[in-house]
Structure formats: structure tokens, C-alpha cells
Image (tube, rainbow, N blue to C red):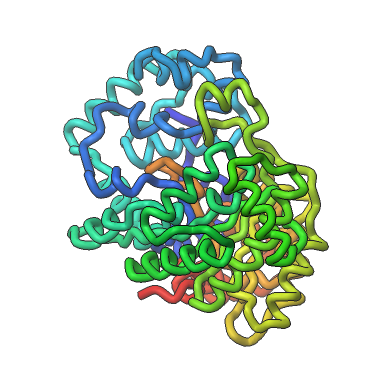
Amino acid sequence: MSYLRDDFLLKNESAKKLYFNYAEKMPIFDYHCHLPEKQILENNTFNDIFEIWLAGDHYKWRLMRNYGVDEECITGAKSNKEKFMAYCKTLSTAFGNPLYHWSQVELKEFFNCELEINEENAEQIWDWCNEFIKINNITPQSLIESSNVKFIFTTNEVFDDLTTFVKIAAKDYKFKVIPAFRADKIMNIEAEKYNDFVGQLEALTFKIDSLSKLEEALEVRLNEFIKVGTKAADIALERVCPIASKEDAEKVFFLRRSGKSVSIEESEIFKGYLTYFLMKLYAKYDIRCEVHVGAMRNNNTVMLNKLGLDTGFDSISEDNSIKYMSRLFDKLNIENMLPKTIVFNLNPKMNSEIVTLIGSFQDSSAKGKIQYGPAWWFLDNKPGMEKHLVDLTATGHLATFVGMLTDSRSLLSYLRHHYFRRILCNYLGTLMEDGEITSNIELVGKVVEDISYNNSINYFDVK
């Protein structure tokens, strides 16, 4: 038997009441993830637990590398079983890492297996889970529906195929899958394949021979996304760049389109302008803007060349671009073009700076018009979530918070919502037990329900 108990992470009676009476029953709204929509559409039965648990999950890959596991047993040619065994051995001593918790909970909730994950039990867990998959015909649909998920916002580049979402909508699923618009590949002008990406956008729109034409093409594609239900757009930045003039951004665009490389300074001119343009565009169409800041990506060039993007070689950036974020929000606000925005911060030293900044741009158009997003990526662990709640409540308003997301490529990651909910309930339950907030369990419970689901429904205006 594993160490898990029903009161996992719930340290007092108030916390238990909040979780079991209010949080646990609420559906899940996953407003930012990286699930492959074609996998959801095809809905094929999985062959083994590796396909569900380890394939494509760079959280787990990163942990295995830290333990010294050979890359052949992570992303290489070793068998699925060998890779699974290596992960179980790795996890057995990963105390304090969120995967130590998440994986054990996933095993119990999705496969009805309560064996503790370690090298000794790995063979039995492998056999148990694979038999469970076969008997119960485990598919993407069954995993999502068993998690009580109602809405999924995937993350899709401007040139992605949207017919997949039309086909998913025609299926009898108990959840909706909606693309979030993302123009990062058009923004990252320094990328080696930048002109290829613009070419893909041209193939869906028209010839792009100027920055104005690029702007028009992005708007055309956004309207195509809106036709299939899009409510949100995503911008990923290591740091917010100063707002440049369109004329200066045009010079950089022409330089890159002519096949020449651009400097870091030139790329930041383009990114600064395009971020400003995109946020205005999102305000025009009442699209919620999800801004992710603070990730330093692709640190390891050798592994980038070997494995490509999104394989576990990113980290937290030290750049603090709060002044430029302030000037961006202020300019948009002056022009009455500041969209509803969620700021996801990866550097915890910036928590208070960002929470206090967004407090300068709230108004009566929405509760929490500008949101401080949940603890994300390297921070979606117990200490990261706890610090996030402390910093958010100290200078913000917790009751308006839109709650957790998965930001994941794994179909099992919905249990992270309940991991967060337990931490949230323990945080509020402790304040109740210590006499620091009201003892009215129904009032606090309603706030828990709203953070778990209702606030997202209202914020994204979905039915």
C-alpha cells in the first residue's frame, strides 16, 4: 500500500470539510494546456501505461535526467517497459518533487492501483495497469470524462488545422475542446525557420510582403479561430519588451524576410511591437489574453539539436521586466484596448511586483479583469502553490481568482487540479482554525467552489 490517505495534504478539520464538501465535487475547466487535439479526436485505446504516463511528458523526463538515467531510456530506443521501470526507480526517492505525489495519485485514481511506486513494485504495477487498460478500454475520452472535465483550451499556432475541433465538436463527448490562439512562431523572428512559419500563414491567407499584411493575416486567422469557439489567446515571453514603433518593427521584419538574421536587440524591437499589436487585437474581439513570462528556453543546444523543442531543457529566467509590463498595460489602457489578461509568472521573486501591478489596472468590467495566474510549470508544486496563495491574498483578492490549469501534454494531469484544491483548502482551513478569517464554512466553501470552476466559467464567458 502507498502512503496516500484520504486526508492527503489536509491538515485540519476545516480543510477537510472545505475539500470534501466543496472542492472535490466541482468540475474542471482547463483553460491552458498542450494536449494534442488529434489524439482526443482519434480516441484510440492505449496499448500500455507508458503511452499514457511517460510519452511526451517532459516533467518526468527531466526528473529522470536528474537521476542520471541514460537518454536511451528516456526518449531513446529502449522499450516502453524499460523506460517505465527506469521511471519507477527514479520516482521512489524523489521526495518533495511534485511528481512523487502526482504519479502516486494518478496510479490510484486512474488505475485503481495502490502499490507504492518503486523499483521493487515496478513489474507488478506495469502488469496491473496494462491489464486495467485492456479490460476497461482506456481512451483519451474516458480519461477526460472520468476526471469530470467540462472545458479544455488547447494551445494552437495560427496556422494549425482547425477542422479537428469541428470534428471533435460533432462527437458525443461530455466535454468541449476549444483552441486558444497562439502567434509565438510568428513573433519569434529570430527563429531559424521563421520564414517557413510565415509561409504557412501565407498559405492560409494571402501574400505577406509587409508588416501591415502580417497584421491583417493574423486577424484573419483569429476570426477563423473564433468561428470554432476560441475565447483565449496565449503569448509566451521570456521578458516583456519595450513597445517599439511600427516603423522600427517593419525594418526588422523586412530584414528577416529577406533571409538575413537579426540581432537580439532587433528581435526585441519586433517582439515589443507585436505583443502590443496582438493585445490590441485580442481586446477588439474580447479575447482573454494569457501572458506567460519568465521562462528561459532551450538552454542545452546539444539536446535541442538532438530532440527539438519542449523536451525538458528550459528554466526560470532572472529577467524582471515589470517596468515594461507596466508601460504596455498603461498604453493599452489609455487607448481603451487592454484586454482581460491573465499573467503567468515563472519567477517567484516577481510575485508581489506583478500582483500589485495588475491591481493598478482593474475596473468594473469584470471581477479580476487582470488576473495573476496560478503557480505554473516549475512552480506548480506544494511550496510554489503555497507561496502563490500567500502573495496573491496579501495584496490581491483571492475570491476573484480563476484557479488552476494543467499546462500539460498528459491526459492524467487533471489530478493536478485536485492537488491544487487540497492545498487551497488547507490554506483557507488553517486561516479558519487560527481565527484569522471567518468560521462561516458555507461562505468560505463558496469561494473554494468559485476558484475551482465558477470563476473560470464567468471569466471566459462560456456556456
